[in-house]
Amino acid sequence: MLELDLSAPIAELRSTFGDIKTVVDVDSLRAQIVDLSEQAGVPDLWDDPDKAQKVTSALSHRQSELARIEGVERRLDDLEVLVELANEAGDEGAAAEAKHELAVLTKTIGDLEVQTLLDGEFDERAAVVSIRAGAGGVDAADFAEMLLRMYLRWAEKHGYPVQVMDTSYAEEAGIKSATFEVDAPYAFGTLSVEAGTHRLVRMSPFGAAGKRQTSFAAVEVIPLMEGTDEIDVPEGDIRVDVFRSSGPGGQSVNTTDSAVRITHLPTGIVVSMQNEKSQIQNRAAAMRVLQSRLLLKKREEEAAIKKDLAGTITASWGDQMRSYVLAPYQMVKDLRTEYEVNNPAAVFDGDIDGFIAAGIRWRKQPKD
Image (cartoon, rainbow, N blue to C red):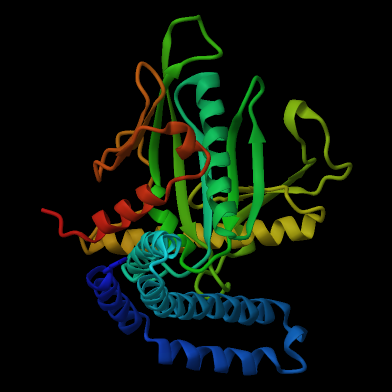
């Protein structure tokens, strides 16, 4: 007779899930959805497109969060029923299915638990990620493109909307830089632990045979601001240049000067956008990112004054946070958390949830 007993692990999952629901405050979440739904139903909502976008995006994010919570609760209930049916019928197939579902739910609830650690001021915002090739010549440019694909594949696997806002291609291979937006709940808080210097060690496909090459790329992650009220950027503080969008090899992908580069003169911050067909749209997108970077810079300066630099999002060449080694052995290791895997191919294909979760937990630990 089959005696499948999963009561202890299920009870542990329910306890963890109960803590998660308390932190998330499901009743408050439902109240927010009701309020946002009423705002979204106002007939003249789209008379103000910026406000409408903010309301509909917030509503979508909160509905998604609630659906995820409710879905996990239903699956926990179903798992207990499945265990009971497997025991009653002596069904080995149902027992195997129950064990598999337990493993899946353990991971899902673990992911939710990590999300409850994202309680920073901007953690729930969408994220703007910039990747820049560093030292290492052609290999660094190729590495930057590998990282871009890694993050895009990660977002794709999670079903997160992504918009590549700007790409600057290198002459021989890879990219000099790229900027993309991830519009998902807690995208900034989740991806912020990816900020820093990434290092690749491999047998270079571009250099002499049999010679290892070390190259670097910097990742910057900033929260996307929802409005323009917090940072005022006077017209006199910026220089706007327009140019023609281009793709790999210099091939024109746009026959008009629609790409926009905005330089903030007081700080030297430069933002380029060429994804949209309209110069007006590219300028608006560039201004949003510029305001986000200026606000983050302001917050960092305030933190420095308070001597509280924990969590500052900067990409310092002297602060390597992860190594990707392809030769003479296979390993990807985070130098902060000590988390590592021996399958770089899977990592470069977007399997980075383990690194992100370890990074979020590490960031919340008290530092000496």
